[in-house]
Image 1: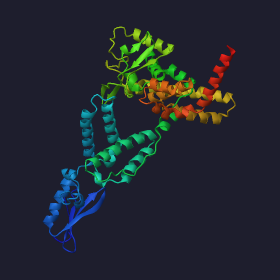
Image 2: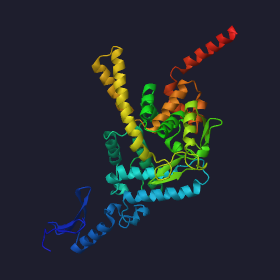
Image 3: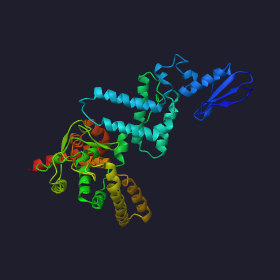
Image 4: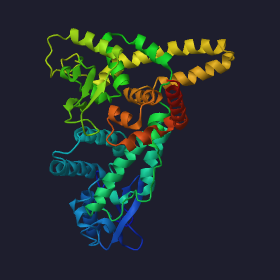
Length: 430
């Protein structure tokens, strides 16, 4: 081969050229830039190095066969993050089969599905093709910043961060990495602020408008169950006919149902670790009775809410086809009524419009889980204790209730003191 002639292998195998010194140089492409793999005395040596690069995609410093200091676990031949994610999930599944048998709570299958969805959406396109030891803290932080600029909620970003941190910690524990690329990276997110502060719906007028816009009695029952029991949407979907005890006005929350990659999966126990019974009010009890009267032939083990295909309630379909259209209509109706009320109170038209537009935008983002937090706010406002809130909402620990809803207790001490004074005054008068 003449001096200076270039040769490129197919499938991005790098290019070989001869230097003025007579040595042969192999250059390869990494992350859209050309880097030198190495120089060699003969062209045959460069061709052999090129063949190895095409198999391993490892530079000599990272290749365990050429560099004994590289961990043995990398010897599989330049395993990409995409494959490591699959192996991490398999390791979690194997560990779960040994450790989680008889554990206090379910949800492991849905958690794995959530991990896979997060990986496919954000992490696989960004780092799936990369080798773990070539990643830096900036690579991970860049994905998180992209999520933030895309408008993702802080707690969603935090969930992604916890997932990717757990994966790289596992790679370190397996000896694949000496140091995690996310070591030293911190994501400061207050889940309570993201989940609760901006999504509690204190306006009863909006709740009434939304109830009136729901298309059927079954839709109104689902809405009232979410608001009246504080149940998670998986818990409401998992209610069976036999879980409704109208004689004592109770609804049992026993086995949530989640949709995992197209399949409805029943978890053995709720997220808090134990079943619970929730007392329902007269309005909700009446709706339950009407619904059960229409389901006279149902057995106790049948789902309380049936889908179009004879299965249980599929939330994604329900939200898209029935709940969100009603929510959009209710937001428009509420905004018009609220704007008129503010103008009557002396607000200018511009200020009233700006106020209701911002509130309506927030209300359009309402989800079933927001109704759970609204239910908690109503319980606090009604004077329920933190223990009662924990029991009704099914938190595993009372500290969870206090942490999530502590900002709702502002002024609670003054209210409690006032109630004590009222009690003492009533007893003195008796």
